[in-house]
Amino acid sequence: MEKFCSQAIKELRIKNGLSQKELSENLGISNRAVSKWENGLSKPSAAHIFSLAKIFNVPMDYFYGKPNISTVKKPLEGMSSITEIYKIGRGPSSSHTIGPEKACKIFKSKNQTADFFKIILYGSLAKTGRGHGTDTVIKKTLSPIDCDIEFNFTEKNIPHPNTMVIVAYKNNLEIDRAKILSVGGGNIVFENSSVELPKIIYKHYKFTDITEYCKSKKIRLWEYVKENENEQFDSHIKKVWESMKFSIEKGLEDEGVLPGGLELQKKAKTLYNSQHIDETPETKENRIVCSYAFAVSEQNASGETIVTAPTCGAAGVLPAVLYYQQKKNNFSDEQIIHALMTAGLIGNLIKTNASISGAECGCQAEIGSACAMAAAALAELFELSIEKIEYAAEIAIEHHLGLTCDPICGLVQIPCIERNAVAAMRSINAVNLSSFLWSTRKISLDNVIQTMKETGHDLSSPYKETAEAGLAKIKF
Image (tube, rainbow, N blue to C red):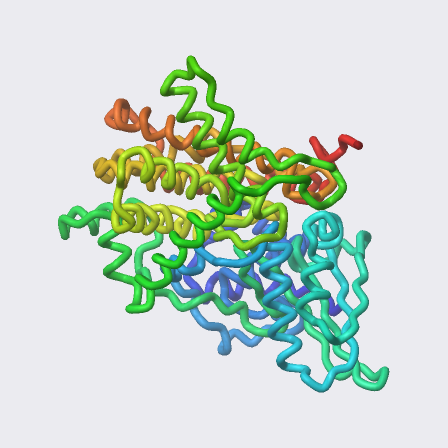
């Protein structure tokens, strides 16, 4: 690899009007760390190089060799469509199945004359790829062309924890190769091209600014979403809700053992049908909501179709609470869809200002974000004030801070499925607390999202979707 150019960081920072303090806050590190990079006293990690490329909208290899500042674009400010949060696809992992599937489809389409592919998986993709079924989805996507998949567990100098290389061959000669990063939520980035973000359609990217705007126009959060999305959004969000309902209903009928080798029984149907004669209303609510969360999570673990909310691993939280409320209180699909819009907005804020990737920030970024989305959705459904919606989402994230991503055997099963159920119930508690105590709150949603980002960067790598620490060390 070429020598790292420390000068590039300072020149890009100045070009984009950022102080060292502002850049360090964006990265979740200290001012001193940035100063050391710029003075050549230390070098950013591969993950930080990826973050720098994203902030400055340049290729990652820009930091190796001579920079050409005149070619740098000022980073866009704002948020992309909520359709980037809600993706319909096969589980069990948005970063480990949906992302690689998308990468293989693009690369295969580009190399239609290839007669063989080689794929090398690095970082979390290598360490938990078999458990997540990454190799299975790659083979299915590239079929009928033969392929060889290599799991590289040793390479540390990678641009992102979820990195893969695809090489195309024809007659035993290499004709093309690409390095691709699966950056969470099913989104991918091809290295050596500008780190292209989806089109920015929301000019606001902080909840405080969104609140001020909504109050000035006397509109609710879902109306703010409608104001910014395009004409195709309505049909997409309706399909999202239909897909969520279908995954619950299918999961409640499913029985048997989950794939992967843990011999874990599917529990959603049993849980749903376990009513007893002296069951209290509170116990029944707990049982039903949890059964819905189990249903979606078990469908995800089985490689069936679910909706990322915001990820595959956390897909059961939001649909569980909304489906329960619709069944209990007869909310219309239109009301549920409004709640989904508000939930998507919260997920978008987290994705933009922190991360929804377990490989980057641990499970707090997945289950914590899902819980915040569900809490906001419920608060919207009950037509609570924007302050109460904010507080509900803030509570939900705050009490997931530091949550590790440590799936046993790399499978999205233990503890992932139960975590979906627990987070669904916690979202209900968050809304109840916010409705009573909103006027006493001290921490804003923007503050807690930033804290989640910093906490995620401080988490040790083995606790971020590598199956190397925590519960993942337990052997069966």
